[in-house]
Amino acid sequence: MRITTLSTWALAATLLLGACSKKNSEETEPDMVIPPDPGPIAASAADRVYLADQSSNTVSVHDPSTNRLLGVIRLGKGRPEFLSPLYDMESNVHGLGVSPDGKTLGVIATLTNAVIFIDLATNTVKGKVYVDRNPHEGFFTPDGRQFWVAVRGKDYVTVIDVEKMQVVKNIATEHEPSMVVFRPDGKVAFVDHSETATLDVIDVKKREVIARVPVVSKFSPNLVVTEDGQQVWMTHKDVGKVTVVNAQTYAVEGVIDTGPGTNHVNMAGPGGGTRFSGASAGDFAYVTVGGENAVKVYSRQRQLLATIPVGANPHGVWPNGDGSKLYVGLENGDALVSIDTKTNTKLTETGSGQAPQALLYVVKAGGGSPGASGLEAFTPVTPVNIRLVPVGTQPVPGVGGGATIRPTEDLDEMVLALKQLAANTTYTLYLSDSKTALVAPEPVISFKTDDGGAVEVNAYYQIRLRLAGRFAVVVLGDKNPAGAVTLTQP
Image (cartoon, rainbow, N blue to C red; front, side, top):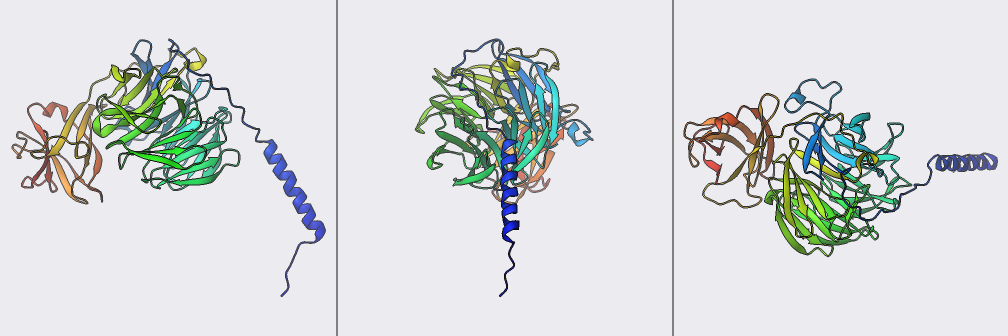
């Protein structure tokens, strides 16, 4: 058999050229310079809380020193106007990440595949970068030079050069990455997923996955790294659990049953506080549990310490600069809640933008000079929340569900979210004069459940004016008044 080989000279030249190319490549990617941990920082009038509002397509801006909504940064039309041509506007404002110096906010709009960078001293857009299908959450690297975003509709994390405002790399991950955060030393990043039961560990300098940690569920919307670099806490919304992973060895330390609709997690408490790049400090983990309208508090050893009722469907959660307070966005309450972490009690509730998702507390926003201009006035309206349960039963977390109804541009938006119905089955939501039977029925929307008997669907309808003296009733069948009443208001 004849084997063709390179000559000795050609092989040496090739190796030399490769070595030079590698050296030049490494020289263009300087080592990361990470600012030191500032430690706990007392609250000041320059701090701000930002919420990504998915229905109004705004970023709400709150002054936590006065518990006041200052206004919103508008990035697109409120629902349902996003169904019309958008041109240069964004839709489904969802994810947030802030630069280490507190001067730039990265905002992710999932429907228009956009990462929008906002100058927090002026509340104006510095630039936009469009990525691939359905980006979800992202964060700045600890040195602030790059923004990494998990592209949920694909199988990679996209790296954006913030100065150049352009994509420089896609890092392959498991399918449907959900969020990316960085260990405080800047050496590794952690990525959870929406359709794969793993936690990916990425070598930041090499930009490649170096470990894959099996976890209990394929759907994890959120994660946080502790500031000491020792743990990763990640949520599993579909099964109501939290997995705790050792951030050094990548071994699973334990799994906690937290409750239905477990959504976001963050650290707070003594010695704690907000940091950067997705890390936070504190002795306790705070978990938003949407199905119980509560925030649950756990020790670092995974022991339940407190359950705090906060309001309709808590979603995003973030501590202030010293960990003494925690801020929570109510997705179905259109409000911002504050919690005292010393007593684990709810302190305040302030109206905000519509359907808040991610939330960030930024210490000394805008580098200590947060902008007051550029904000649009916004008048919050408290949504109507209707609980739906099986006929003849009392509410049980995770069973049945409910509807949230809020005003939009011209119509009302109704978000219907139900669980534990028959799989792959059609039902209809009616308004009725009776809880237990259809009396003067008015059909609102028909829907079909998924393989697990769940559904989440939006409808746009002038419904609030029709609610007085009437009840929401879910009936089996496609607009069939003779169908069996399955769910009703308690």
